[in-house]
Length: 210
Image (cartoon, rainbow, N blue to C red):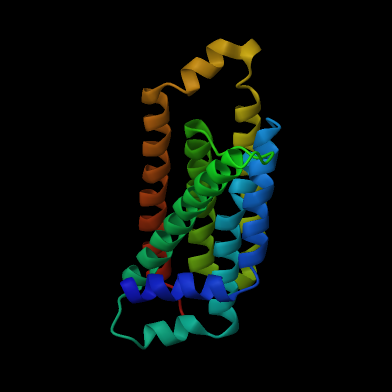
């Protein structure tokens, strides 16, 4: 299991997605400094890149057939991909927090994500992978690459719009969404989506023929 997750992370670090992901994180910090909802959208991009490039890597190098020859169950492989997606999403936020805090300390025009930004980014990332991965495990990357892109756009735009509503003039909306109970509920829903999606992916991938 750890080997599969390590392989996924190593593949993304060696791919062309690393530089765009770092650029998106940097641009997100600048956008957040200007209170732009685009910042939240950009924080979701690294997870999208990971799903896209990991799927492309498996498709290009026929990794699926290789994995099936190993003493690893299909459900373990599916689980490793979901864990890798969560790892990338949380790593993105940690890097954004570190870079944003350091940049603010140095007087740069950047701002680290707030708690609500982090929660909404995790929610959008989990929702994106939760919807797109079952399609990918059932039909393969080549037939579903646009699904991941479309789902990412819709989900990220939705949470960005929700973040835009949290302005001083909408204090009631802001207080309700940023409350500890609401933030905890959003995280719980995101993880529940991942759990249901994982079960669906396992069921679909179990009947896939190569």
